Amino acid sequence: MCTEIEAKLKVDSLPQIEQKLTELGAEFLAEQLHRDYYFDNAGSCFRNSDQALRLRRQVTAERQKNLLTYKGPKQKDNFKKRQEIEVEIGDHELGEQLLCTLGFKKVLVFEKKRRIWRLANCMVAVDQLPLLGGFVEIEGPDDEKIAAVQRDLGLSDFPHIIQSYADLIEEKLRQLGKKQREVFL
Image (cartoon, rainbow, N blue to C red; front, side):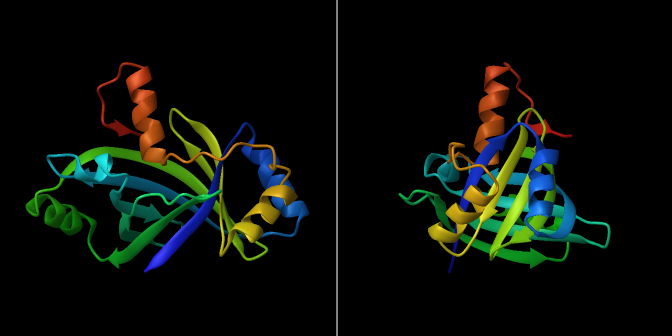
């Protein structure tokens, strides 16, 4: 069982963050396009219990990966902390067909552009999302390392966002009075 520990921060300027990462000597790892498909059962069991079931199509210049991910409820902590189980699957369409056959339905689909950096034992994701704008996620082995990277990036005063991107997009769609369940860049 893996535990994901991260800080998610809303930022105004992604280029400024990437400039700071470069100045700090961070290693640029990859540019990715994610198309995330969220599933739930008819009773919205996952959503109502702060869990998530996601099928991700992740595309880089080199290859495409399909990842099936379960995320458990968030734990009480200074950072966003939750159980995460992720497996790579070979065929996206068959993965989606399997989930639907098991009684799950697709409830939300959205894209994001992600640029990944490594800094001080942490992974720093610089994300651009439709309707929401720019975010930085700092994922690391413990609270102290994440807090240090957040401080080094000049983001210590930025509030942590506990909600998932899926929750934030659904909230934004409600605010805009939109019924659509698919949002692309």
